[in-house]
Amino acid sequence: HGHVIAKDNKRPPMTVADALDAPRRDTGRIVLPPASFLHEKEKVQKRWPAAVDFIAKNKINEFFGSDHGSVGIVLQGGMYNSVIRALQRLGLADIYGDTDVPLYVLNAVYPLIDDEFLSFCEGKQAVLVVEEGQPNYIEQAFASMLHKAGRGTRLVGKEYLPMAGEYTGQVMLDGIGAFLRADAPHLLPGEVRAPNKVGDGVDAADLINVVPGRPPGFCIGCPERPIFAATKLVEQELGKHHIASDIGCHLFSIMPPFELGATTMGYGLGPASASAFNSPDAKRRSISFVGDGGFWHNGLTSSIGNAVFNKNDGVIVIVDNFYSAATGGQDILSSRAGNKTKSTKHPITEAVKGMGVKWLRHVDRTYDVTKMQDTLREALTTDEKGPKVIVASSECMLNRQRREKPLVDKAIKGGTRVVKPKFGVDEDICTGDHACMRLSGCPSLSVKSTDDPLRDDPVAHIDQSCVGCGNCGEVADAAVLCPSFYRADVVHNPSRWDRFLEAARRATISLLQRRRESRRLTFADA
Image (cartoon, rainbow, N blue to C red; front, side, top):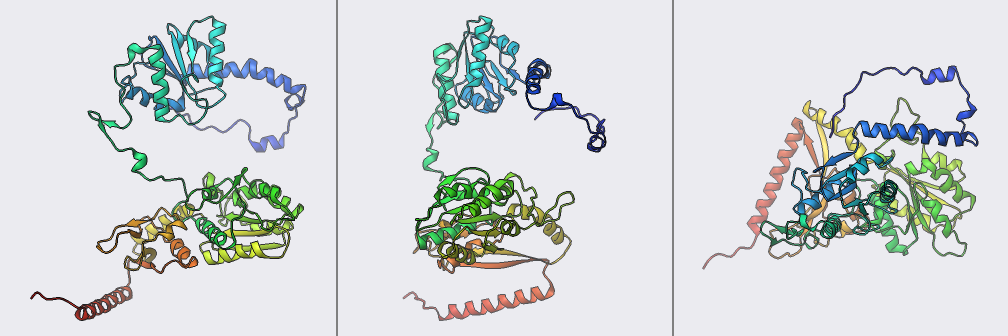
């Protein structure tokens, strides 16, 4: 958090309309030689010093700990929490961030401030640079500053920390600990507290053996999950295919439980990368995915246009969730909602036809796993040549909930009758094989222990986070797995007729239960 003093809003001295009414032209601002060389000189002579002055005057970078000390640590701003945690475990910092080792925190890593760094190094024998990534630009720049200034401070970094990879808590503890043992052993209080030691040093369980792995995945009710469940089912039937993935939410398909996708090139480039597998001798077609955001970004030309031009015989699935969902849910050309400032409601199917695609199918409800499965099977087995494009459409559940929940809550509070679907699993029917989870992976689908002494395995269970999309039941039906899934409609502010029906149902169920109990075989005590 931080503090900022805001000023009153002021209209700019020149608006875009003013610029259009009075256009100005200056060849000196064109980015072509020789003007571009003048731009470079301006950047070095004016903008760089101005940036340095701004960072210094506004104290963008921060200093923590004592002004004096034999050693110090320079770190990127994003590394602060990990560094201070490592110092806490070494007994050199408290929970409030007060540290015995001076820290120079670079909240602005470019440009670097010579005076700040050299002042920080004053009187220090050694300084550790904590810089995640390679090459180690910051360490090299600081080494140059020390050399030019003729300072004798020893600068280290990658000697104690990995050249690549994530700087986890354990990595930071090992690196900073090794640095301090080598250059300031007098600071270390004694035995370092181990990561799994609590209190007086009692062993705690290794979390990796206790907490199951939870890879990133789709949101609850995500309409993209059934697309990949259908793909998995088709592969079980037709065999493995080369699958080219794309950047976006749908990239979660490479993780469990789906584990689909062999390559990922870039945003909108799933089908473009699959063009490398366009072989006339191949017996199987490639499958590639591209999101609607990536499609409009560059996929229309680089993926669809390229496939048409090169007569690619692969299958292309365009995942259409109505938004650029992976970057926050912004509207795009194919969004179905009205937008006051943007032009929406331009169907992807029309754009694909305009590119020359002849084989095109549109699945307007991806939760229909059976239809999705049949469409994929048809695309992979048809005799028609050229690209086969499937547009799989359903609204992003996260955006849908953001839009609908406030309206539903308002209606319920206002006394309006509202029906909300709720899915569940019948414990008496569920066999506990959990195949539904292997084809769904929904976070709301979990396991539950039963009180039945004759059953060892926990049964499937749907928790309260369920949004009622019905995917779990659809998958179970498409895979012919089990009939244990059911749907119940929760009625808010029920009418008199709703109450009458509920009372009649309860009475009928109670009667049937009493009849069953009366016929059940019992054993009396002798």
